[in-house]
Image 1 (cartoon, chains in turn yellow, orange):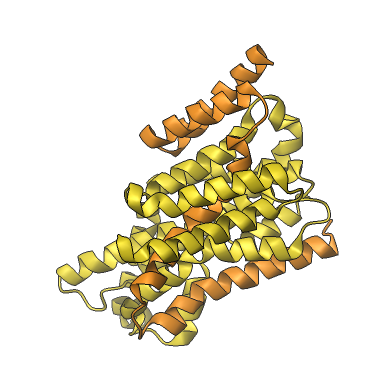
Image 2 (tube, rainbow over the protein chains, first blue to last red):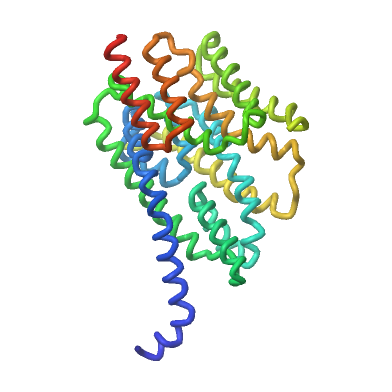
Length: 245
Length: 99
């Protein structure tokens, strides 16, 4: 060991081991993410996105739910404003997630916190927050381990880009996915995501309003208005029903 | 390889998404949301997801309608991967046999 190594050791070693700990903890979750990524890439290529455009979307946007919604609604040329609005609605949960994480980020300067939030996903947020609560219980300072969180997020980030691109490259080989039933993967993914958000029937009433309004709009109004109509009706219902939960 | 309108759509999506990621941290860190605002934000992702897939619930052929019912049932019981497999295989078979 050189003098420099010894000097740096107390700082570098915990960071490297925290990174590795994060990477290890995200592995089981990663297994569940890979199939989504492949399905998203394949469906994107069916909708006409190129093998260059898919990693551009998944690398810059990096929020799976909104990418599934965007691809589902994708046309050529795309409805730019509709897709941006839907992206906001699907990802509005990030506002709550960021607010929940904020008390744990007080020890970080904004120049570190803001880039770290670029890679915040449901998964790395949940892992990072759970880890912070566990560290706090053990009296560790700071409770939120940035390298641990970055370890989880980096693996998700590069895996997401890699496997969506792979899906896009393999998509044309698979042919018309609707001929088999692969298109049912989307509702399946969405329904499982919603089960994860399930907090009982009363809390889910706005979803029912959304479903009914969106379905009726789809049947009677041409175009993609059903998404906006359904989403907005559900939000109004959530607002009106809020007092009563 | 990259269409300008596609690029614009992707850049807008990315900007909107990043705004949601930093917005909660920057704006809400020192505030508490009203119960109504919290209820709306908690319901929002589900409202959007169900609206996007609403056409599947009013499909015009029995194979797809039974397919979505089977998928919904699977989603209440199984994790992601089995649910996707059941939904895809059931719908594929139903389309094959029911036309």
